Amino acid sequence: MALAELRDNVFLIGIMGAGKTTVARRLARDMHVAAIDVDAFMRRSYGKDATRIYKEVGERRFREIEIEMLKCCADLGPAIISCSEGVVATEEGRRVLAERGFAVLLETTCDGALDRIRSLRTRPLLATGTDAEEVAAERKPQLEASAQATVDVFDKSTGLVARNIEQMLKDEGIFKE
Image (cartoon, rainbow, N blue to C red; front, side, top):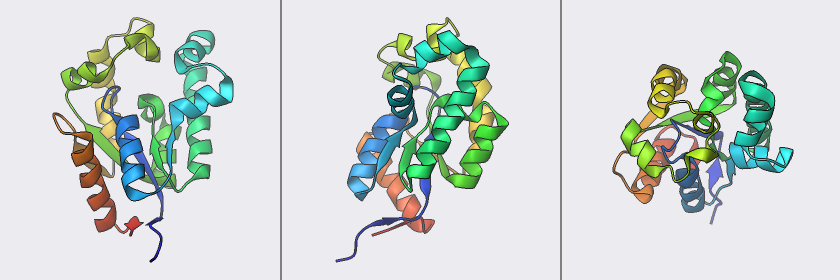
């Protein structure tokens, strides 16, 4: 029996609360491939969470760190990589997504995403008082432009979303069982 093969990084992108980390874990488990979470990688690398880093260094430097972490995660692949929402905030982040893998946008409503967020204080921009709807509206065109595929996740189970993405990756020739 041949092993499953992921031929490229798969970046899961979307607004905060879209379920990127949860879907990445489920998808990787179902496909028998690695999952990497950019925020968790940042936390391990810097010894503090994204909110604390953001507060200490400001948004500009935080975005640089975020892209540095994205590149490190991509170097570890091919893997299913759950990305921070902010990776699309800079031109460099969008370029990394385009050049280093296949970006899948997990699309949901702002209300649906907010329902999924358990603690708003764990989100760097929200922890500083930024409005979630404002952030989502600002990121939407950047997310859409960065995505090579889109999957609607609103009111769908994690399992269904993972199956839909897995089939898409097979159809695209990115995943082979």
